[in-house]
Length: 141
Image (tube, rainbow, N blue to C red):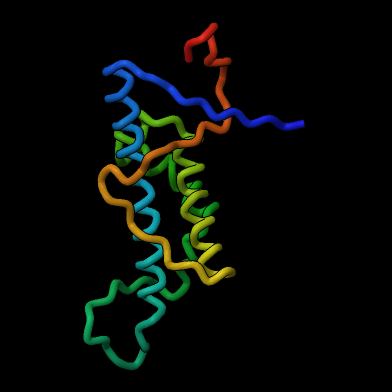
């Protein structure tokens, strides 16, 4: 039997700053992944024989759809390019991208709205799928 636990934490000021930085980094990575999706879609809308009145970002025709696995596999490259991503645990970033692609699947299959960009302070929670060691010590995390 798999059990999930949800904990309400009461962090001190240093932990609040760290968690806010993690949330902001997750928001930026979510928006970056969503921008890749939107650019891919916009590059497929423009007819080949004429230019659009709007400026469109054009990608190569053989460029694959930026799916979950491709974006997840690009995270190590992004961590080298953007050192800010190294601060956040990798599984948190992976579940953040999974959240985006779940929203994309809901849009495709169930007719929900297109995933939206997250504004500053709009990302309220992050998911830790597992820990190396048990973070609970008595009554503290």
